[in-house]
Amino acid sequence: MKKKCPNVDVRYIGIYHYEGEDHSENIIFIDFHKDTYLQKKGHNSSAHVYINDLYQGMKYGTFTKKDKFGNTITVLTQNEFYNYLTSERLPTTSLFDLFRQFNNDFAFGRWLKAIDTIKEMYKNEWSQWRKGEWAGMFLEYKFDKFTTDNHLTNQMRYVGNSLKRDGDLDFDIRFDEDDFYGDLKASTISQKEAPGNDKKNFVECISRYKKFWYVIYEHETIKDSPENNYEAAHARLQLIKKIDPKYKKGEHSYESKMKAKVKFVKMSIIELNHINYKDVLSDFHQGHQPDGSPRAPKFKINKRTLNNDNYVIFRYTYAKKS
Image (tube, rainbow, N blue to C red; front, side, top):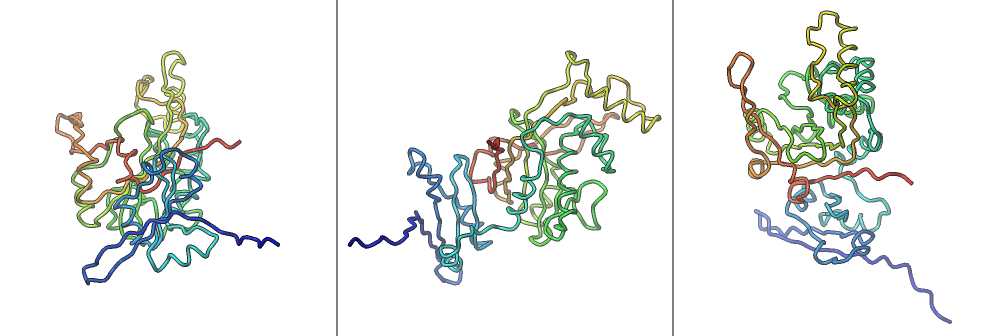
């Protein structure tokens, strides 16, 4: 009689170790998830782990990430390794888990019309509803609603515009438990750069809090145009003037810049520190104020960084459900 083979789970584990400042030996385990790696060619060339991945694992105990090729790795400290092997549930890092929840409910994969989102923001008393860059305002509105509705503001909270508390810096997100800041960006996916933040404020922030997250949501874009008689720009202007008859902008206001529709398709989080931010950010020359005075210098984000796993610590790409 043949003996039944026990259930065996084969894993591909990398082991890294280094000597700490106190001369203790630190061991980090990397699980290269076979369900993604074994389905692809050239496994050896695509199985990468980066210093920042090891750092995230050491900081949180466990850290799971999908790289730009769609491969998944989990980084674990030696204290977490046994629990990981004996548990059916993959470990999650709390902030990344919260972004997964947000993304599951966000408007990925469908076309959003400008006037529809502007009306929604106005109806729900979002203070930035009338701004021309409505796609970015809609993202911020949804993020704030998600964190407040789910009582998550002790972990991450929207601090943009009028929602700042005393001492909050001029960015969009405050991660209170982990004590650092981040900023939300909505960007057309084909653009190679995205506007950053005030240069002086960013340098002060990275010096004080040691790290910073850019949370970048990319979308396909259909611009307003003469072919549709600038329908989105005119609808926005009519709504604003209906609510505020004293609004002074003319009928052609924002026509050339207005987005008629957007469809969000992916997001990435890049983590910057006082050493690597200069590789990602460069000066953005804004010109002058209407009175001729120079504008405060800002940074711009090189979006090629979003393909570099040395910087990206979290990714989400919308997959159409069958």
